[in-house]
Each structure stands twice: as structure tokens, then as C-alpha cells.
Length: 456
Picture (cartoon, one colour):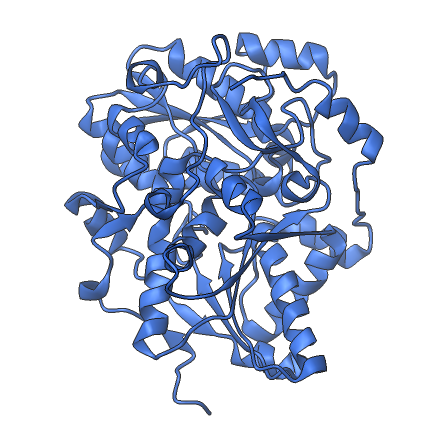
């Protein structure tokens, strides 16, 4: 057996004390958020009506390479961080590959995912500002669970709008949120003006992250003492999630390991962006070379089939507009089981990096994803979340390519969380009733036609 252990842990004293802001090293900065009415960049005063003040400052910060993590957040992190970097020896053996496979496991907290890294940060800044509570959306429920945990810890109210199909498919994750004191509403709902309009426009819809975002923003902006917080997409979220990549790099550096290929699932971009940020920074500065792959569901292929334009971040068109790869804000994805990846757009940071050629993208169908998830669970002993399993699928594919070519590549992927609340999906896969859906070109063109033209 290699001298490299199965699990590489950092000491508490080796934990990062600052988040890394990849925008500081990007030659082409991500385009600014713009006002949907004027199409002009939105500054601090406009954005602070929706987001917490300090989070707005982080959202607008394109220059500071490192931003200090407040001590209270670092102390909270110590309850479940540093998270392990795992050498997948058993998976390597099962695949009979010369590739060396590592994964950063973020599922060792009650939320079951990496989402807690940003949830505690956003809740902390809301509390420091003296707010009463926050509103948010959640897809698979991991972000809602994480935010409810952070709000309970800090004594904040938490209102969650959960995508309706996930609300119905994942009742236990919903109940974890309620256990932590959050109110959970299936979206779209009849409790908001925008929700009622979406129900009228799309009768019988199973919802989407874009729908839930619209409702959460309306609830925040119409309730005194509340602000809206988001679990992905925004630059501030990728900043907080950089702790995943910083720990991964520190653990690999500790043993002299350099990854050739870094893979992450991509919905809004928080997991992938957090994992790759410090490695991407090295490449942007000309210090190292890496290959990065974003993996998305074939049913919601924003990078691989979307357009790089300004679009609304939400279905109800109440949010700022972002320049990103998008399928159109009115695109409602099919109800696949990777609820956290059912978003029509992509982080402006990742979109710009992809557009500039620093990042590759691949889409995969969900039956192939669950085939990989099942094989991984049987040899590595962890039941992965459907979102994470997209990265597992491509990591396995790349390892099998190494078997064919004899290359000894080192592969790193993000295991964002566990799938113990996703058993309806596993049941369908095991019963052979799971299906794949890929939107047609005609469907996408219909959605693209509704993207507003922006001269910005």
C-alpha cells in the first residue's frame, strides 16, 4: 500500500484563515450584475435592499485576493472541518485503473453537504447587521438544511422556499429543516404574488430553482428586517466555498500530490467554483497547468447548450440580471433527481472562465449517473448525493480512459454530500423505472427566444 493514507486530514491549526477570491486573478472579470430596468451595473446601494451589507461588499469585490474569515465563522467550521481528502484506493482497484483518484468529502455534517460553508457565513453577516431573519430557496434541500442549521445556531428566523418536486420527493430533508426551526414552503406557491403568477403561467409545474428564488426574494424585500440569501451562483458564495479548494490543495501539498484533472458537478456553481478556485488561481497566474471539468445533467445543460448572455437569475424576473451561460429564465427543467443542479443558469465567474477556455464542460444522463453512484457506494462505503454522482460518473470515465491508454493521471473530484435523503431516486434506479430526459433543440430555442436583449 502507498505511503499516502486513505484519508488525509489537516490539523485545526492548518485550516485556512481567509477565503480566496479567484476574481482577483482573472484577466477578464465576470460581468457585473445589472438592473433589469435600466440595464446599468448595480452598486452597493441598489443591492443592499436585497442582500446583507457585507455580502454586497464581497459580491462587488473583484480585487482582493484574500478576504479574512471572521473568528466566529472559523470556530463554527471547526465543528466539521477540516473535511477529509480521501484516496479512493478501493475504487481504483475496482476499475483496475492506473489513475490515482482522490475526492474531497463534504458530507460529514447534518446538512449532508458543502452548503454549510456559505450558510454560516451568510447567517453570520445577517446577525451582525441586526436583522431578524433571512429567506432563501432550496432545490434538493441541502442548502435549506444548511441555512436552517446556521440560523438556529445564531438565533435567526429562516424562511425556505423548496422546489415543489423536491418538497414531495424528499420529505425527510424537509423535516430536518423544520427540526432546526425553519418554515418550509413548496414552490411555486400561492403565498407570494410572483408564485401565483408562475402557477398561472405554468399550470401543474413541478417548480425550479428559478421559481423558488423569485418567491424568496419577494418575501425578503416585502418583510421588514429580512434579507435574501442564496446558496449558489453568486460570487460571494463561491468565495465562501473556496475553503473546500484551499483545504484540498493544502492536503495535497502536504504529501506532494499534484492533480492533473479536477472534476466537479455544476448546477449554479458553488461546489465546482469552491473546489477549483485555488488551483484555477495558480493557472491564471501562470504557475501551474490543470484540466478542469464541470459536469451537469443532460436535462439542464446550461454550459454545454446554453447561451452566454445577460439573463434573469429567476423565473419571476424580480432579481438582478447576470451575464452567464443560461437556458433562459423561463426554462423549467424536467424533474430529475439531482435537485441541486436544476438551475437554468451558471455562476458568472464559471461562465467567464468557461467562455475564456479555462474550463471544460460535460453533460451526463441520470441513469448513467446513478450507475456510477451505485458502483461507488459498493466499493467506497459512502452513499453519494445525486448531484455529487455527476462528478463521480466523469471521474470514473476518465479513470477508465487511463486504463485504456496506460496514463497514470491524478484525478481529484468533489464529493459534495451524501444521498441518504435521496432514496426515492435510488429506489427508481433499483426498480429500473428511472428515465432520462434531454431537452430538444426546439424546446431550448423556445426558451432562448424569451431571453431579453440587453445592450450592456
